[in-house]
Length: 242
Image (cartoon, rainbow, N blue to C red; front, top):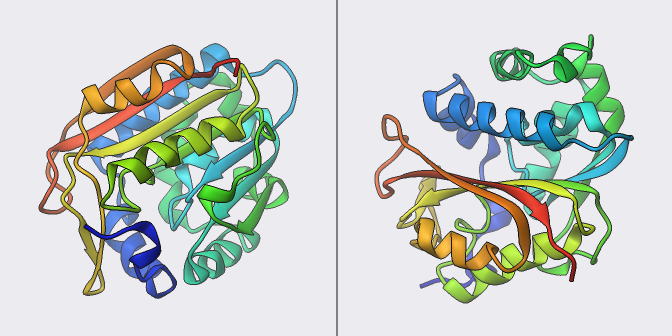
């Protein structure tokens, strides 16, 4: 089982990953977007806040889900190639591929009020090369982390540390959304292997329940994206007092 530091992150191919995972809006992502949208609409901050998306990679929809509430969104990414991809995609107006994702969000009023989501994201987002395990504590008031904690290491200890570091980076009461691959056995991108841990809803719940409030965990299944996993999970809640 590989540790996080053993994986070839700087050789990660964001173009291939984006093409395989997000070139079209899949049913599972549509369902996840709807769950996150409705939760954030119900608990979203009453004033502009600072948000964070951890391990963004070539996936913009978590950041888009926070857009109505965030005056600033820090996109923390470890891979050099992913950082370059994000800087280009955000600064120059994201690709039309993301329009169907945004359309799912605009079924609720806070999203519809944003007339130019490309411009809004370009002005709000700040791409930061960084390491999840080195996040400062209590800096952000809203957060997302999608398919990261389960997909950066083959060790359960690092999975739990990743979740704890993310929650620790949020201020108490901050709403969050996290997504996970269920029972993932690892994955390949352009022929390179990357690690994962096999976790299900019981493991996710145990990791979150003492550090969160208003916790909701849902399982999402659809046509398989790749071999070696059994579904997807999304966890919604608020960071608890420490």
